[in-house]
Image 1 (tube, one colour):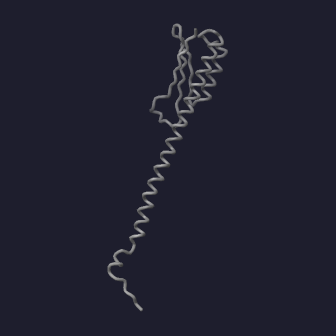
Image 2: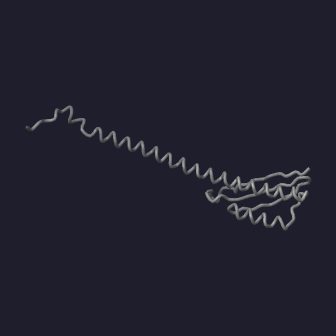
Image 3: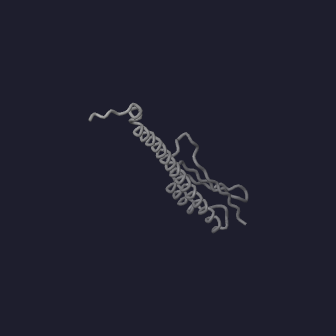
Length: 130
């Protein structure tokens, strides 16, 4: 009972295994693409969170100006605000520059995910009191 495999069937042995390996390869590339997208999404989310913190801190400085009815912020309020900027953002620095009848609240920081060669991120808010 030694059945011989016809020559036509003998040539097709292993084709299913090859198809499975190609399918796994394509699936692996898809998974790697999804992982890359997830990493980019996390980076964008972190950047947006830092910008939101900077906007909130700039709003806080504008509120201090509004409460004092003056563009100048007292040093007793400005120093703790600068400390909060430094604490909330990596390498964060805040400053208030008065320019005539308006003041520019400027906050700069360096995101930890960015290379050191990139310029620091910056948010500037112009405050004009009535």
